[in-house]
Length: 145
Image (tube, rainbow, N blue to C red; front, side):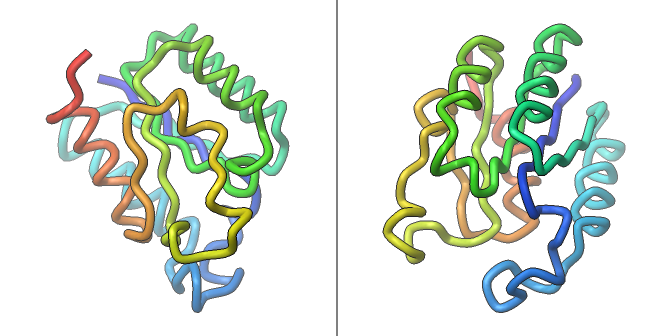
C-alpha cells in the first residue's frame, strides 16, 4: 500500500506560525509521525510539501502515475482558492482525504469554502497532526471503493 501525504503553503511553518491555532508541533514532527505510522502498518508513505500550487498539482499527478492507493492532502490556503487542485484530484481519481490541522468550521467565513472537498472521500478538520493518522486509517480500514 502506498499513500501520498501532500501539504500546501505554510504547512512547513508548523510550530512557528500561529501556535494558538495550529499548535506547537513542527512540520518535522508531522513527517516523522506519518512515516512511523506507515512503517508500523506496512504502508509506503511519500510526504511532500510545497508553497507552490503547480508543484502540488505535479505531486497529485505523480501519485496517479506511481499507482498510489490514496492521497491525504492539506491544501493549506489553496483549499479556499484553487479549482486547479480540485481538477487535479478529480483527474487522478484516487481516494483522497482532505485534512486540516485547525478546525475550519470555527474560523473565518472565507475558510468555510473548500473547493477540493468536492473530489474528496472525507474531510478531517481540527485534530492537529493526529488528523493525518485518522485520514490514513480511514483510507486503510474504512474506505470502500
